[in-house]
Length: 352
Image (cartoon, rainbow, N blue to C red; front, side, top):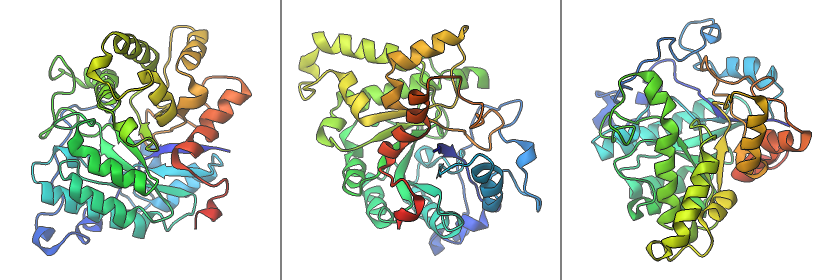
């Protein structure tokens, strides 16, 4: 079986979202900060442009035919439009209403197309109490399996101000996913500890460092102690950095336990138990055997899930995206780990 953790569907026209906005925002439409860094090759596969026009990912039926059916995918997780940067908007109420409008569109016009689709509902991180209400409102839908947070935020995600979101997600048995969206633009912080990069190659290469900051915050602030059944997914931020990160955090914890007295186990224990990482972009070390070592060191049989990043041109094909590995490891990455992350039945027809 095969589960794809990252499928980017999008609307063909802003009207698809705007019609779900309250009247006071109808004239505003969708106003979201743009990514400051441009990929010279663009972001989308041009051979996925729908026959009737529009951008790749805007024809849900085409995603079924060209991706789910072609690759025999049992479940595909919708992660939405990568530039919908709700954490980078200064107006909390507007961002929350955009999240609600997106969730309505997701349920009404995307998830109904095929039972194999799963949905990542959106919230506005700056409005955590309102976001918690959205989680309880939409989280009971059987195909909604996770809450999406953008990678960039004003303060790290371990801070107690975000905990209402986590309480609601745990209550509704939803995972919380973090995906690159708003790093370095709008009201979010610079995307690196050194400040704003000069180019896309810097920005994209350093996404993993942003994830390190978020994960360190979530673990050391005690989120996974307060909410022991909460599950996190880190999507599209790489995974080769994880072994070093866990080693360093564990080492520092041994000498600095007084700064996180709520951690009864070493930090890597909580990561291996409660956090998963998506495979795209797949690491490409100098020698193939180095990748095997990365998988072993990060306990990939417990922590790694497959993601294609469809329909981005630099995504990973389900047939060829992963390097060769033993059958047990491949089964865990392509199926078993994601089943645990999203608490899924083996057959999509059993979701309802």
